[in-house]
Length: 79
Image 1 (cartoon, rainbow, N blue to C red):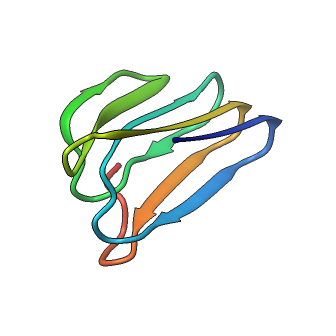
Image 2: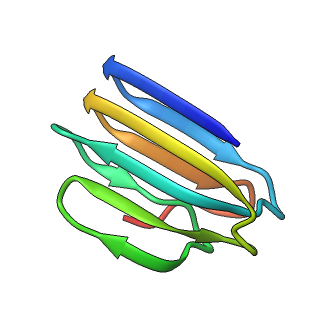
């Protein structure tokens, strides 16, 4: 399980192949690029959540004022 949080600033992460986690990203003022392979996606203007692999772990990424970019090692993210 992991959590990344910042108040002001962008967050960028690269996820290795085979990640099993519930993914959740949120920003108050910015955009979100979700990783390829995200399923069961629920998205709105300020947040994106979904499942990577089996979804056994959890990864939460939050910023108040910035972008969240999550990419997989095999390709770019999904906007």
